[in-house]
Length: 174
Image (cartoon, rainbow, N blue to C red; front, side, top):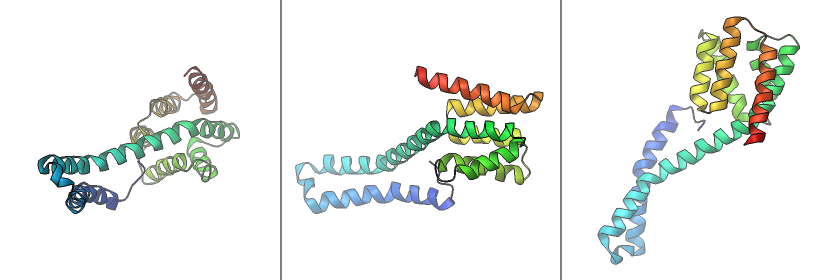
């Protein structure tokens, strides 16, 4: 969902405890327990326990949608940067900076790829982690395509252009 702090995990588990308690107190204060105490308290505890999961899955799907929508713009900028002579690392850095306002989700992911590489992780592992974090098929195939192009020494700009065109065709067909 894009929350990277350790406090986000603690907050989520805190919500899994606090929301059922708050709903149970709300059932008690509103007098809904008179309709059937086992039913009212059971529903409040069940809904309260599942509500944070629902909220988190909604945030994840919204983030994936934004990444899916913004990916063609990022690919176009990557094609331009690689055709201008930048390497893949510099391209990811530059595109991340350019997409700061229009596509902040993609910018964050490209920034994380750069941070992983600066920390000493190989490019192919950083791209695999990118695909795993985002968990979108088109991003997973992009990462695989970039890894293969890098390993086999093919032109990154041509690879990106072909992938961008196929992604646009796929989106039109959908």
